[in-house]
Amino acid sequence: MADGGYQGNRHVIMPYRRPRDGSELPAWQHELNTVHKRVRARVEHAFAHMKWWNILRNCRRERDGVHHTTRGIALMHNLTKAG
Image 1 (cartoon, helix red, strand yellow):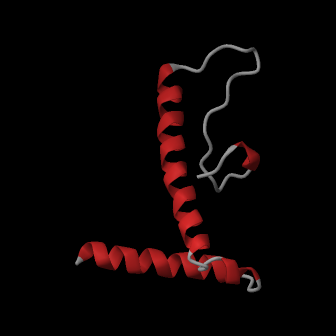
Image 2: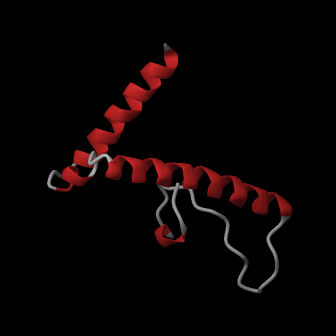
């Protein structure tokens, strides 16, 4: 999930944009944008916590460091949820 800065990238989910003619979005697109905003906020808060705990700060040196770190954290989180 991404914000408007990733336009043209087919690999991310972006919110709907207002049409160029200035008309409003349909209600269903507005509702999906609201859900998108809530989910992104949770993800951004999770990244902020990982930075606070110094988990992601040291991954900048490695090429795939952030990717492997977040996959490992997600796996541990899912294992604790599964019991």
